[in-house]
Length: 427
Image (cartoon, rainbow, N blue to C red):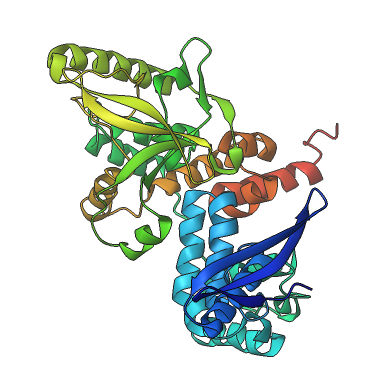
């Protein structure tokens, strides 16, 4: 094992220690210029520890939980996870894990203290999803300390039982056709929110998918709509930690980006004549508006950038036609009269009007719930609904988005009656 040696060279002191051989030849690391022997020995010891730990400025067995979580976030989360997932993990780290465990050494964590913490989360009234999120994040970070880092021999979270918490039923809003008609009458044709509402009702898209649509995604001839991206808002040129610190404050460096849809659920779906008609009218209207506004019409252009992982991402930027741009243009489906982008943020106004003025329970996701329920209620196969909604598995379709309605219950009764009376085909 390497040992630090010190020696005096002239009026100064120097440290040196043996490093790995290069091409079979002896290799030493040294540094001089220290005033005293003690200074040289102390600095040499630190340098040797750093060398033995592959450039890390800590001893793995002595690192605090706080420092380890920072290391895990920088070396795993920022490399492997999507931007918004990073924000979620970082929030848990800073608001829950560090305040409770940050002062302890990593090696001192044990199942007893972690089980007590898990139980306290339940006693303090945290929801089931919140408890699972906190404990799962802690467990994932400790898994990384076992492999590949080998800081711990085993993960103490593997012995912790997650507390049983009854999930509070989430209100699933199913709109009636007459309620949706009231909504589109309030936001009629030519209104910036009319088309997004129709797409949600007729296609069941996620809000980020709807507002990420471009006209290239609409095939009028074959009456199809392709989902191959979603739109997300994120900060650029700012470390994710700074974003969390400034949460709630004005975001001065945020922009809209195209990313892959959730679960990479790329799909092409059929759309009906009523939506095709509305989309054709909207496209013509946008062309006419662009002619009317001329050089003052706003267009969206795209710029290729790199994310934290080095992957290419597409940033959208609004510019007026009179300014001009060498960047390629993107023709968004959801725009204002003068071409400005209609975003998921601006749709919050629409939701507030529906809540406060129309007195209807509503969020954009309720259009997705309603779409799935109406399809199942009227005989569509769960598999086709799964594909249409872009779900990862069919269990999500059945358990989350399909709801019992009076029509479904009556259909079940009618099916049974037909079966026992011999009117239902046995084929």
